[in-house]
View 1 (cartoon, helix red, strand yellow):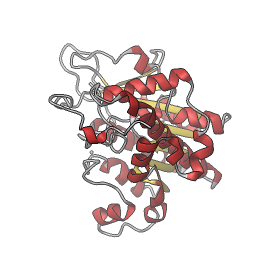
View 2 (cartoon, one colour; view 1 turned 120 degrees about the horizontal axis):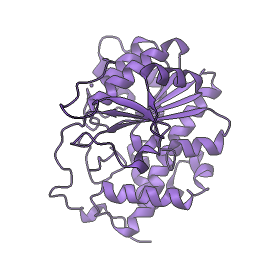
View 3 (tube, helix red, strand yellow; view 1 turned 120 degrees about the vertical axis):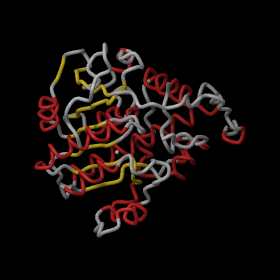
View 4 (spheres, one colour; view 1 turned 90 degrees about the horizontal axis):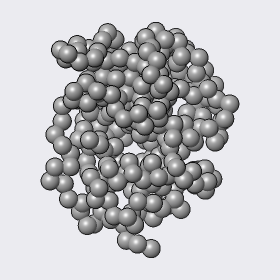
Length: 308
């Protein structure tokens, strides 16, 4: 089952918060929460933290509506707090940096509203463990995402509608294999109903968001951060077509660590090998119960950009 990412899917709303010990396993199943390299070697939490401390840029994925992912990553932020990494959030727009640096005072919801955080779209307070951990440690925060209207404009008109500061990056297209993988993810994310003519522009919108997050991470390093951490959906932290690809183009010497937080299937099995291989580290957690998002879904006609 595919979980849609808020703001890249123009026609769907998001279906869519630290304990650090293993979660209980279902009787007869493997451990419900465990960690391994993409090649299958087992890792401990301590080894993951050590790897994170060696990296310049750490990308922590998520399934947006899975609270286990948010709790585990909040614990990881706490473990890195002494390094004072800048934390870049997909959930905040790039224009939010000044608001993110402002005092929270006693009203967290009001502070979130000032930053442009969509509390309804992101099903707040799902991400609260991460926000609380970063604020409690006094870590610098930055927005990494395009504004919703910017992403929509690109999805309707293509890469030419991207913000000027991303134009140079987007002028270099994705490699064919990466574009094909991303196209399939977008089609699956729209329950197979995404019109063929819309796919290239939706790909451009997703690529623009990945390029924007990569830019936010690199700007944090340029501004003096010892390291930076990205909080984003698993699709954004994939090495084949996500943020790591854009980082490799702009900063090939940077040490980048991508951690995918994946769900086991209903029987406790691992995701497909192709998904596991898209990350440096895969962290399995229990599956979040949810209804089939494609049940009864029909693609609205107005959502399909006209062919040009």
